[in-house]
Image (cartoon, rainbow, N blue to C red; front, side, top):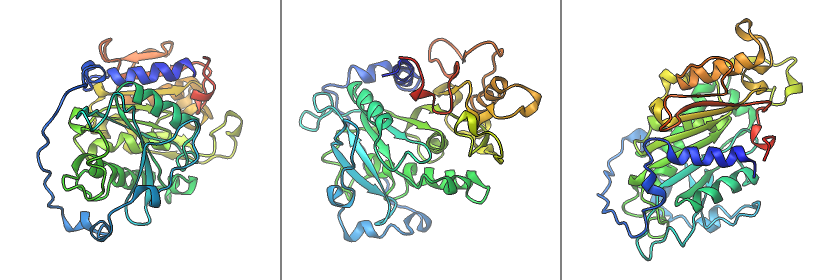
Length: 338
């Protein structure tokens, strides 16, 4: 596995807000959860009546997908009876219901064209986080390029996708099912060894990073975030370095640091130096491609360092801020040297 992936996962774990004891001292711990407030607004209950008349049977509704060396422990469905799926994985030697060894939650959301299956990226992240004492989840969503653009108003699209996954008051969301479903309507409560009061770490790549960056707007459970390939201005068709010509530029203002509810000292961003989607395709602001990528990172992270620094962190304790991968592309994880 590329070293950058290992480093990224470790940095996620130690971001301030997910205490170091989480990964090592959960065995034998128990938390008495208070009953959740099940009063929801009419708006939140729209299109969720399906949960009342049909207990979800995850293995039937969301069959386990083909995976790269990963067999999910359990699957689930969110949104509505025609909604998308999510898949759960944990190490039963660390997290288990029998001994009440409950674990914090890790949610990964993949990028455009990658979220509808479990590929090597999902597999790697889920396995690594499970080894570190998390219930690991990867979430499907409408990941097409057309839905990214959403009539040139991408923020509204990302907001809606994030809400469906993370809104703790929305009956049927992933967070509701795993963190708030006190009456076990969705059947996970007596099976999945998770306790969200320990913390929920989010991780996303590209479009998935946009979706997870907005998660804190919908739940207070989010305690740390790691976001790959991010920015506030992009060229959607320029995923590859050679595809820069003829691409339309689109702004994503909701990704700016001032618009993100999760505090900056609990976030970290990693981009490739030659990320053609987020800055490297043209001389925005009259500067070269590296400076453009850095400007994107500065705006989303709220941290500023000189251009010759690859790493820029608020402090050495939590390593929040940003890192740029030399020679890395938009999908820098697949080209990083191991």
